[in-house]
Every structure is written in structure tokens, then in C-alpha cells.
Length: 435
Image (tube, rainbow, N blue to C red; front, side):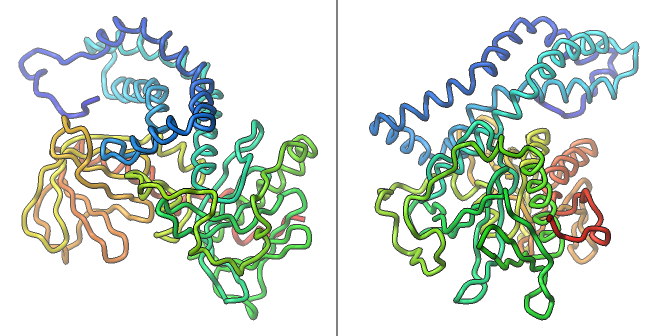
């Protein structure tokens, strides 16, 4: 929905949206039915893919097209998320309107009815978001089965350096509510991640590593007879991992056998405990497939390249912070500005020539990026300009008004500043140990 400014009120006229929403609320039941049956639809696709190789190849072929700029299942969830965005926009309008504004009453009535549906389906939506993430992991992890389980929840994914016989090596870790899985990226055309091992959380604990024996920002994970020495890219990354690991371990202990009795994933080979794995060899069971258009933009691949992590809480925050509109873009060393239709969703900016285009010209994953206003050395003398930067990668964007400028900064900050979120416990007070 458009969020630009209007001058209609200067002529005594007003743009209204509340009456349109109110007159079309009969579709709420369609949204509710879609949400209620979404898991059934999703698992129907999954089961059909397993049983019909032609159908599976059809979906893979579609995902390889430019029009499929996100994982296919992400598009399935968009209609279910739309009600939440309607609610957020109506809340924003009501906060802006005065009580006797011509559109206030209809917006208020629409909000009440929409909020009833979103509130009733909140638990279902959280469950669906988690199911989507587990299915994404199931497709992208080589060497593990039965990842999708009713009681299993995704917690965090990201990069850590793991100590092995060859020294510290980059590994991708996936923290779930009952186990920790670590992987490395394979050399298959699909760029999936090969599982090296899985550790149950049931008897796990985390300790600070002796500074004399480790690199900066390191900690040790103990699980049964296994011991992993890992290092994060920063103190904040370390704190996030330790916090989520500690909370997840404690929750497993509180819930006891209810989690432990669920079906555990099974590794497809005996390499789970070995770091002597030649990851250049594709898994025999995975035939070569065309590189999917969307794969480089998924959070696990961005985390791998940016050496960062993202949690389910971050995903849920990002869902609420999506925006589209025209922006002028300028590269660091270019002179001109290019007008583009920009869509921000799934932690990523997608660039279109116009809003009518079927697929983006390019994309920019923003995990790891910072958003700010230009400094004097940037030599930008325009209004409503914000700056995106990751290391030496710098982009400038110019909005059409103060309102849109503030909205872009708000949504990008909200969805990408997870590295700076307030931790649930103080670093000074925590003993970094779950015993």
C-alpha cells in the first residue's frame, strides 16, 4: 500500500482508505480459511514432491526463473501476512489522524475487525513461520533427515569458526529447540550445506574458554562426550549465541522428556563426528540442479558470506518491517542518481525499473549493513538521503519526502539491527555457564 504524502486536503478534499477497507471486510473469512489450511497446503506440496519427481522438477525449474526472487514457499505465506500489514497501516493512520478526521471512524472500525482475526490466528502464524523455516533448512541441508517435527522450533542460524585438526574453520551452525547442527557449504551447484554433526541440547552446557588457549570471542560447547571450541566474529555475535544457547538448554531441561521423546533427525552417513570431510565432493544422493535465483538471498547464505547470524526473533521483526516505493540510488563513486522501484522484504532490497515489472533487476541483502545519514566526506548535498554500508560497500538512496525518508530508515533499522539488540542478561552478571 502506498505511503506517500497528499495535498488533497489543501483543496478541502481528503484521500480516504477506511471506507474502502470497511466495505471489503467480507474477504476476512477467506484470509482466515487460508491461514487455517496453510499447513495442509504446504505439506501437500512437500508430499507430492517426494512422490512425484516430475512435480519436484517443475518446482525447481520455476524457482530457477527470475520471477521467483524468493524461495517459493515464501510467496505462499505472503497472503497470510497481509492482514498483519493492513493492521499496522491502519494503526499508523489512526495515530496520524485527529479524532474528527473524515477517515478516522471507518479506519477504527476496520482495525477492530482485522485485529480480531490477527489476534485469533497469532499462534497459528508463529507456527507457520517456524514450519516454513524448518522446511527451508530441510531442503538446504545435505545429510540429515526428519528435520521437520511438530515440537521442534528454529532458534538461530549463523557462522562460527570451529576448531578442528586443521585449525579454525568456518562452519554454519543451526540452533533448534532440541539440538545444535553444524555444517559447511558444499561445492554442489545448489550450494547446499553439508552436515558435519548434530549435538542434543539435553545434556549440553556452555563455558567461557580460557583466554590463554583460545582466540578472541570464543566459547566452548559441551554435549555428552563431545566438545566444540568455537569463535564468533565479534563480542556481540558471541553474546547472541551464548544467550540463545543458554535459554534453549534451560528450556529443554524445564520441558524434560516431552522434547526428548520426539523423533530425532538421522544423519545419512557416518561422517557426523569427523572434520576430515572433503566438502568438494557432492553428496551422491543429490543430483546436479540449476542454481536457484533466490538462493543467494536466503539468510543462511548471507550469514555465511557476511560471517553473522540471525534468529527467529529477527525473522519475526523483519516480517513486520516491509516497504516499497520509488528511491533514487547512487553508488559511492558514481555521479548520477538512478530512479528505481525498491522493495524491502526478507532482509533484502529488490530493485525494479518500475512497480509494474515482474522480476527485480538486482538485489542487495542487508544483513550486516548499517544505515545512517551521509557524512561530510561523502560530499552528498541533497535532502532525504540515507547511506547503507557494509565494510567498503557503500550505497546512497534519496527519498521523495521527509516522511518516506524516515520510514525507510525505520524499517531497515528495525530489520537489520539485530546485532545491536538489547540482550536479556548482562554480560557482566552472566557466568556464561548452563549447568
